[in-house]
Amino acid sequence: MVNENMYGLGSKRSSIREIFEYAKARSKEIGAEHVFDFSIGNPSVPAPKAVNQAIVDAVNHTPSVALHGYTSAQGDKGVRDTIAANYTRRFGVQLSGDDLYMTCGAAASLTITFHALQNQGDEFITFAPYFAEYKVFVENSGAKFVVAPSDAKTMLPDFSALERAITPQTKGVLINSPNNPSGVVYGEKTLQALAALLRKKSAEYGKPIYLISDEPYRELVYDENTQVPSPMAYYDDTIVCYSYSKSLSLPGERIGYIAVSPKAQERDRVYAAVCGAGRALGFVCAPALFQRVAAVCDGMTSDISVYKRNRDLLYNALTAYGFTCIYPDGAFYLFMKAAEKDAKAFCAKARKYELLMVAGDDFGCEGWVRIAYCVETERIQNALPLFEKLAKEYGLI
Ligand SMILES: Cc1ncc(COP(=O)(O)O)c(C=O)c1O
Image (cartoon, rainbow, N blue to C red):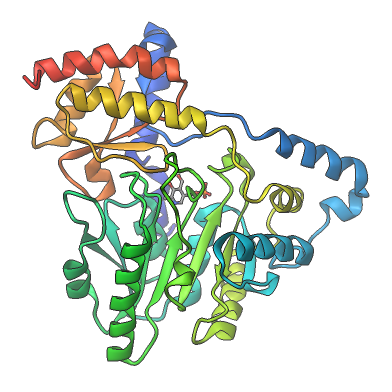
């Protein structure tokens, strides 16, 4: 007998993977140039040249045994010190290498964090729309996954709804900015309001409510005046889960980190529990070569001007065709209101035009669709006339 939960997770594909596989099969039938797959968040621009150079330098200048050997379980100390110093410089938050735990990307960062914090009966709250894997990560830690709605107009947190969702069992609130799937960024005011509410509720229940900040898209913002502040600057009981998957276009290399705020009330115990959860889950010693690459390239990005161009092209055209869209300040997703109540039915109609999108139902938000615009710009240009036809079919133009 196998574990039924794990069997369930492993035997069913996510709908994003389903669409991705359909796109591959359909491309074989009618030619890839006729299929517009906007389903998956795989970076479409190459890693910065500095990544290749860092790999070459590491291989050429570090003896093989040292380069490929185990690092400390929590990651190489020099690597952590370098990344922490950059964080302090960039975000004005004092961090040291001893606050960091290197991981295999954001998925591992989140899984470790939930396991590190969870005790029986605990709950973690996130806002819809949310990255679908959150439910898997939270529930697998043994905690209850609780969803609070966002404000339907802005897709920013609805603080009244959050306050109603917080209970004595709430262990943490999980945020993601820039957001997958909405593209919204939580600015200073949002973080201040969130921090004030969490402080109030922590005091009321006499225990810290943690703010877990999932930040794989932190550097992917496109307008000069869009800042992505560090939540640690606003709230002490914060744990940042970071990944280089998107910023450096390295999703297959599995590298990221957890940063525990040095000001957290139980900082030493939280950091030790992170190390313990990493150990229990087998996430010790993140890939050694890519730890070094991360230290050299931390703060850099691949050429995100391509995503900006795609964002502008798509947002301007779709809104001109009459679709309602959330303006994406960052990440590489556009969240669009489906032109009928049932987003799945809308996606099925779009599929007739070979436009492949993901229904918002998969992100806990019915009536919307996600369009991943991390594709070649030409794909978007060629897809626009088809979106226009779709808009006409719904009488939007
Ligand atoms: C919001 C969000 N969090 C976490 C992840 C997982 O990232 P990683 O590839 O670094 O594990 C993703 C991946 O798409 C994501 O969109």
